[in-house]
Image (tube, rainbow, N blue to C red; front, side):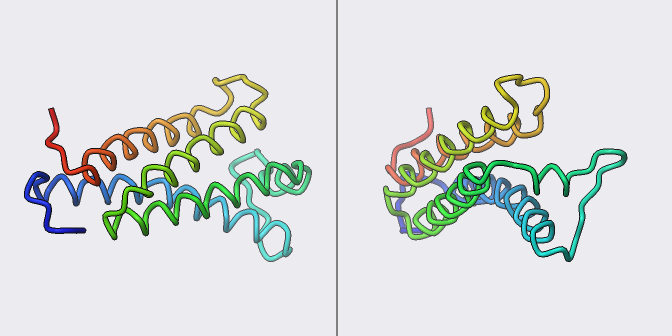
Length: 139
């Protein structure tokens, strides 16, 4: 990040830390998707067979997830470099995540609460990234 005197270092660190949280979520899902399609791992969560659900999912959902992950990673790189394009990349990733999440849950938000929580964390990270990259003080 640049030597912008308007933004304190703890806010910059908090922004980057908060922006990295969704990457944990995306990494877990990437591992489950790759494991399911390669046959190396068949994820289960109690009685819920996630591996079969992944194998039966539409290709557009997998493509959407991959594009969301790439956009979020690009946004993190831009955020570390203190580029204003970080907001655009993170915003695009959040929008793709919202569309894919609505398609998967069929608009029934109560069936995918964890995905909604991650989307809200993404939105908070984008807001903090806006103030960090623009060099304005938080109100």
